[in-house]
Length: 444
Image (cartoon, rainbow, N blue to C red; front, side, top):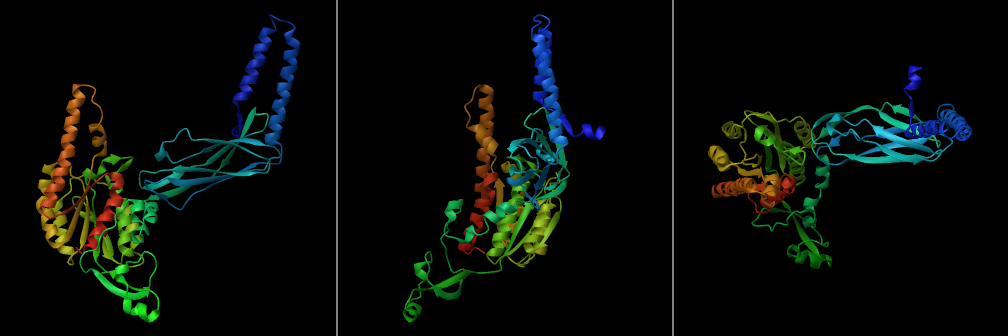
């Protein structure tokens, strides 16, 4: 009996009808002629209730449901989730679907409603955007089915529980996978960089296709083949490219639900993939009070999987980052001149000056690019219309911090250190642009 009541639910229509009958019986004391009609309505109500129950619980049909999940979710991106339902009843069914979504999303009012024709199927699509890496637990899938009468609902509970890992943004990686090698970079916010110097190696002579540089036409080969032929060049290969991620407390600051550390992790995944496609060696490591999560720069088939798994397990450790230890480790372990993309954050000029000697020492041996972040919330606050003296004062302080970020950029460039000051959401695009610029100018 207890198990039976776990599957039967009374709907709002039942209570509305019952209250209306009770009111009619009460009114029949004042208007006796109403009593007979109310009695008939009550018996019809009881009959409909029995029929509703028999349709849902005594008929052979049933609802079949299944949740389709990807193998893993992409952090910071909308991930599609699909639920498929099939109506095995001989009548049209109203369904309400409640999915037990992982608690990290804090969606306590999630439900989908629809109508399923007899024998029909339907898929429900929705998206989830995780903002933390780790394991997410999906609970059961609950479907409440109602017959056309609509007094009762029968619950179907499908035990589709599953644990899904949330990895750094591999969807972003796929998005940028090929665009660095097309002539339509501007459509994605990427700049076309004019090549300078002699960083290109001859690869082969091939037929001309639209988009090839006409300056590379090989006229001697064209005369022999009686069709346009061009010289094809390739970038110099096998340059080590390291993503160096500061995982100290300065990287815990959140924007759009993601921490600065997660933005850096997502950008590292993308730039590592592009570096490998450009035939460079990709590697990474993180630091705070010590050096961790090291992946030596290599160009091998398993490199991206190794970087992905390392990034998945990377966490902020809430301590102050030790740049002196970073310098010592780089000096000891990186013997070949490398491109170092350093993801960190400086809020004040004083914070930079404390670390500047170590950054200068690193830049003497390697090509160092310091990447840090604009405070977009401060930017938005600074342009709001002030309502009182206090807000004017607060906006003045905000503008001071914004200006100090620009001073930090100038200070780094004054010492010959490449710099990117970026909004968190533009980090990946700006990092790719800088990498392509460096390759084009032959700086490494």
